[in-house]
Length: 130
Image 1 (tube, one colour):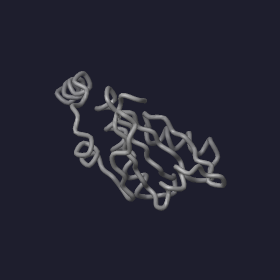
Image 2 (image 1 turned 90 degrees about the vertical axis):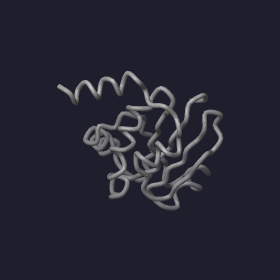
Image 3 (image 1 turned 30 degrees about the vertical axis):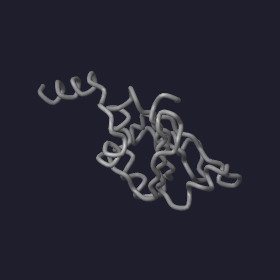
Image 4 (image 1 turned 30 degrees about the horizontal axis):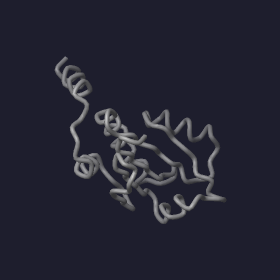
């Protein structure tokens, strides 16, 4: 993902603030996919079918990875003191921002100050006018 902003979001299906912020990540990924990658890391002991159904129900349009909560990596240990947690890396791979707690679309736009995908915006405007 080098050359793109990377937004890593630690979440769980049982976490109400996590569920509330996921539509914001979906919207952000849709509008900024030319310059941003979003990765969701599920931080719970859940069957893969539960996660697949959850991703389908929330129309998640970005990769979902699962943390091994019984043998977490140092990165996971460092970033899962509370859920949700979002870590943002700049295009060079350097940690730029970290937030424990919910993050919203407007927050992501403010943190990552880039232009959205023009074709996506044009399509959305066209659909709204029809």
